[in-house]
Image 1 (spheres, helix red, strand yellow):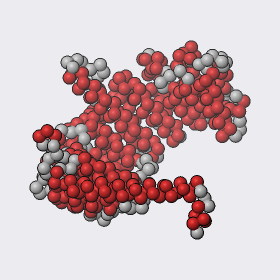
Image 2 (cartoon, helix red, strand yellow; image 1 turned 60 degrees about the vertical axis):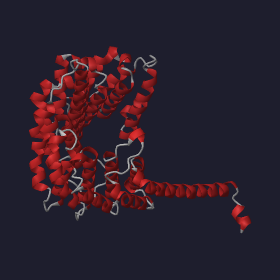
Image 3 (tube, one colour; image 1 turned 180 degrees about the horizontal axis):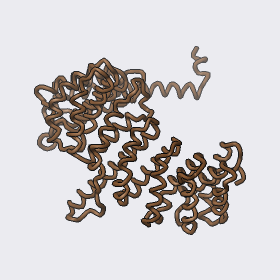
Image 4 (spheres, helix red, strand yellow; image 1 turned 45 degrees about the vertical axis):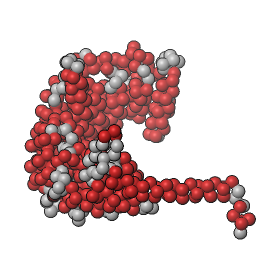
Length: 484
């Protein structure tokens, strides 16, 4: 416990982690009765900033790992100490940051307090004020709190959305600090996720002739005109050499837009359509890629009948963009074509568009790993969505829509599976696509299926022989010497 006040910051941080880990075991068993009393005393010790920070950190972590019932008698004292440190009047930004983090960890623990309007109002005031802090870590933590509050207490957010949260989060998305902006975008992603779930609950209730238990307050629909323009601007902040595994503001904006499309349905289309039309052929690759990303993101949610005409018009442009000079544009285009194949293949004109679509995707199999992976996914979706209906008695259909392209597609997929690396999982994607073509083959493609099967069996045999040889050499390491 004394290490919490260590002048070495890392020592105090580790001490808080150790204390919370021990507390997770001992507090529920009532074996450390004075722990909370000691930590609350440390958290109010104005003479030692480090001690206060680490005590608040420990309190927050304990609230996260200890069952609420084990701390229910001290919940008001704990909340008072945390909120005291989180207020804007707190002179130490480090202490305020630790208190905000503790509040984030304790949001589920303080559910009873959040049910009481007066306490809830004060908590929301403290968090909202913290989003305006000049200290960026405090800002980030405050927006993280808002994200979790929306997830846990959506039903109680109407009052606060109208008076503060709409404006705060829109301004937060424009913050030059990407960490702050990411959390503000995440707030609206959480809103959309909650309202998607509420839509599903409502549909299920209607199916059984019941009323839904919770009300969809349609925050996303109300704010659409304010948040979408900001998201569209954020989508243009791509970095050409961005690491696909590193989450950035452009990715977050695209994800948020896709969730909004599912939450608000057709309402998203007129809001984003001008951006797509203006920028899809723009000279700046950032704007071209953003326009394609927007189009791909709204394909799930709106009525397919509303999207059908747009997809049919956009498809020739998208197919041509598979030959774009910019790799990021091609990657996003391949992904968008995959979304069309998966969700709206009925909008593809079989007679005039299918051949050029398949050709473009097959050419994509010779490109960069991410483009190959997305092209494989698109080809797999085509095989699944255009699968022929089985004949009488479940017999395979005589032919299928993809039969004219079947042999050429699987030949190219087999070439991909022979490559020596698996960056972006493109070889895995190629095998998955091959599985789809095998599973949905019509009778006139059985020879090609036999070819795939024999090729894969030969590869398995080769791998098994290699493993046997390796095992033999491992068990009898001098075998090779004796043969020599």
